[in-house]
Amino acid sequence: MYLIGISGGSGSGKTTFANKLINMVKEDISILHMDSYYLNVQPQEHYTAKGNPNYDHPAAFDWELLRTHLSELKRGNPIEVPVYDFVSSSRLQKTTTLNPSDVIVFEGIFSIFDKEIRELLDIRCFLHVDADIRIARRINRDVNERGRTLQSVIAQYYETVRPMYNKFLAPQKDYADFIIGEETDIAASILSAKVNELYKIGKYCLNTTNLNRGGLEVDNHQVNLNHD
Ligand SMILES: Nc1ncnc2c1ncn2[C@@H]1O[C@H](COP(=O)(O)OP(=O)(O)O)[C@@H](O)[C@H]1O
Ligand SMILES: Nc1ccn([C@@H]2O[C@H](COP(=O)(O)O)[C@@H](O)[C@H]2O)c(=O)n1
Image (cartoon, rainbow, N blue to C red; front, side, top):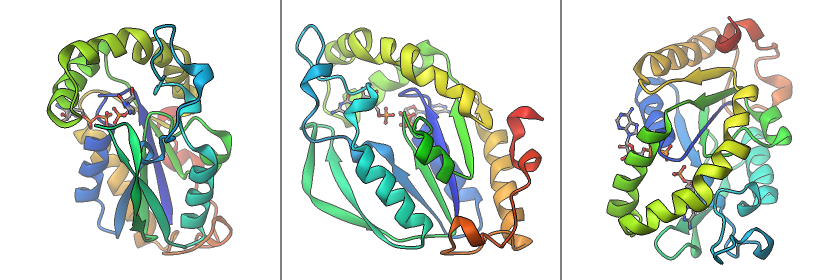
């Protein structure tokens, strides 16, 4: 299985890019959203001075479950993904089953943050999009889809989203093989063509572990587009 990590700020277009890949990759492909792994109860020690939870701090996520689930997928096992509700900011009682597939796109603000998870990923991407575009997109989405008001989105941006982006998210660029700008069409075609090619030549196959992904090493300079 080929595991693609897509990170970047909120509103940078991670989900949209992941969906673009779904349409371009010929193999069986699915998405795992890191947002599903927000902790139900946010750690008190990271609450802001104004008494709000900090959803942009790494500690806001259930890392243990994430590591377990990504390892299980790599081993070819299905997982039960939590369902997170942005309107109530809580994890619902139900889960959804995610079956292993040829390709899994793991997208989220901290998808390439954790060393253990980075090692499971076959390629690490970062969407680098200017802050004005990210906030404009986020306002639009959060007001229309996540039950927020314009004032609350702006207040949260100043309080946590912007400072945490600068402190924790932006430095992830150092771990990225592939830094993608605002226009994502070319990046999506390059990445999907690479995945299609790897499967065509038999370097990857479904439900294999790292040990036997075709029995071959992935040629780093082929996938490491950032350093070419
Ligand atoms: N390349 C793009 N061009 C224009 N709008 C975009 C683009 N990528 C994302 N959007 C819009 O921006 C909003 C946030 O995108 P989304 O993919 O949810 O971002 P993220 O997952 O990084 O938070 C959505 O309304 C989406 O339609
Ligand atoms: N209850 C919550 C949980 C998270 N957020 C915000 O979501 C952003 C990450 O999701 P994206 O899809 O935008 O990448 C993150 O910046 C959190 O601030 C929230 O508002 N409420």
